[in-house]
Length: 162
Image (cartoon, rainbow, N blue to C red; front, side, top):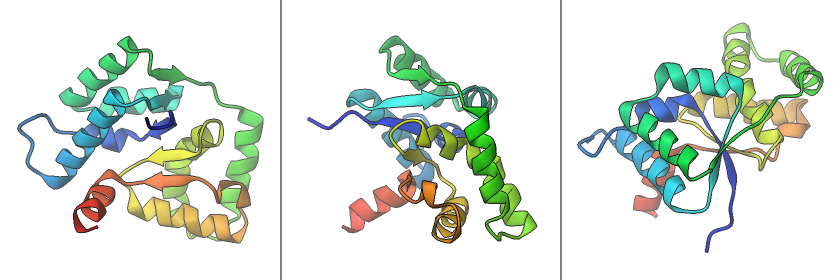
C-alpha cells in the first residue's frame, strides 16, 4: 500500500484535466493523476489562495474530482503563516532572478508555502517556475531545496519511456 502523502495541487492541473473523452496528452495525464489521487490514499491540501485559483480555473472534471475528494475527507484546508511567508518571500525577492522570473515565482510562491507546511510536494504543470525555484534553492533559499515539484505530463512521459 502506498504511503499517504499530502499534495499541493496547482490550479493549472485542475484547468488542464480533461474528461473521459480528452485526447490531448496534458489533459489525459492531469486527469489520470487526479484519478489516481482519488483512488489511492493521498490527500490534497488547499489554502484560501489555492481554493480561489481552483474556483476560477478548474475544468468540469476537476470540479467533480474536488467534490469527490471532499466527500472522502481527502481535501484539507490549511492556513498560512504570514510571518514565515514574509521571510520566505523576502528571500525569493533577493534570489537574483530578473523581474519577469521573480514575478513568475511570486505568483506561485503560495504553492511552496503550502508544501513547506505539509509533506513537501507540489504538483504543477509549470516546468519554468519549477526550474526557477530549483535555482533559487541552490543560491539563497535553502529551506525550499527539499520540495518535490512533480509535473504529471512529464512523469507520464517518463513512465512510458522508462
